[in-house]
Image (tube, rainbow, N blue to C red):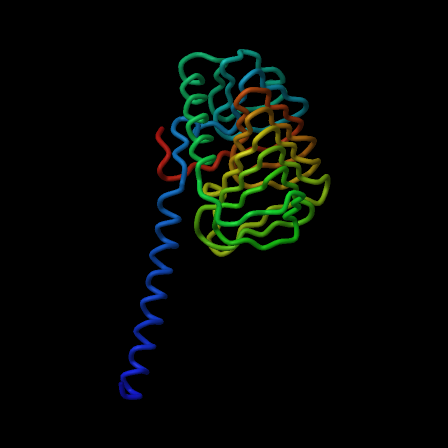
Amino acid sequence: MTRNNIKNYIVMFVLVLSATSMLQNNAFAATIHPNLGTAGNFAVLGASTVTNTGNNFVTGNLGVSPGTAITGFPPGKVTGAIYANGPVATRAHADAVNAYNALSSATCTTMEPIIADIGGQTLKPGVYCFPSSAAITGTLTLNGNGVYIFKTVSSLVTSTGDSHIILINGASASNVFWKVGSSATLGTSSVFKGTIIAYSSVTATTSASVDGRLIALTGAVTLDTNHITVAVPHNDKK
């Protein structure tokens, strides 16, 4: 094999690797995005109750199923509809369960340590798996267009006062999903991005803001003077 042939072979090999990597990345982004179904229309969806303290502002629907108790609206405000059980909330809850199961089955691309605080990190699209709990202290930056899935076996907790999620270079809140094995707690004044689907409960403490959704499958969603805006992916069914 001549020197020119070797050089051409190397160039072709690099091009093939690059193309394969691009196809894998595109396939990753296209195939793991969970379909939230009608749950995608809800900014807040509880199972047992939804309770609010203070001047909460919810952009999107708010509901509960199979429970019926919704308290604190008013003074809280909802731009969408409120569903206290009934067929709409029941279907949304079923769709949320399906989305939770789909997130649970997503193949991990990164395994986090048992004690994992991802504040201060910059992450690319992928499936991040936590063998126990996850925390966010400080700023978490999500960098790049694609799907981000965070799966915890137990809890998700964001710190009080200094927990922020920042989206850059095409990252979108509609493509960020948090599958929480037990309960999620957003600390005071947290700035949070993405859809939380917690097996148990979700608590948003005073002045926490959410661009995404708060969904609890078996317990309550508890709110306190929050701003919650639903982010709807293109493939969600209305």
